[in-house]
Image (spheres, one colour):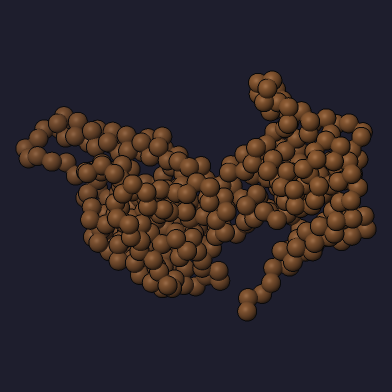
Length: 365
């Protein structure tokens, strides 16, 4: 059995205490609310009424929320925004709620609401505190000409193609774009209702290594071998970002124009860094015989422009900046790997609240 997370245990303890406090408040709250809502005559209906407002007032798919106070503030901001933006005939239910909160006639309801919002934040804490990818940043396709795989968060096959179930992205438990993520979702076959899944980390690493081997690049193969050694010797290997090989720029075009050799996505910030292996033998090869110096310089310039256009394309579409390793760099692959490894060695996760210490303070309330 895995070791329990003391922070999660402390959080559950706080949730339990909040629920007990709400139960004590409930009879007095129902007396207050019955003045306004005759149908709100039990705990279930009261909780449903309050709970239904979170999705209306807070953009839970994208907001990064660090504390119960911040959650409550966003909830109130969402309520006041409705009052300022909706037509008069749609404002009424929000105006009633605003008047209850801002007035003095419903003290028990306000305590209940505050308690409920804190409890709701704690119950969904793992979803709230993480930076979540946008819809645009939730799908990546990679592989060589005959190897086409999709890396998604909540994949589903609709109308002969893959997409994310948008409502489930924020609920995803694994850190995004890590080996643990890949083990949970697998990779999707393009235009086929089929997925390549993995029962073990060893299977996943072998799949990725075999894909890189098919590039025929001795440099990429060597780098990926170092990546696999790094994973195997890591204390928590599933937390490591996938070193995504051969990221496609236009994956759904019959002939895609660009591929990026490697991509790493930071699970906690969604920052993206790419790596291009660019030996002169393949990336700066000048074609044609018996060319004069002017013609050779023009060819070299066009090759350079092509690389820069590719660089800008990946930035504009995916917000990816990338490092290009040229011949001088590739003479020392240990240094190349050390550079890549800097972006894999993510020691600090998103800052979490220390519920154990917070409980120690809150237990006196």
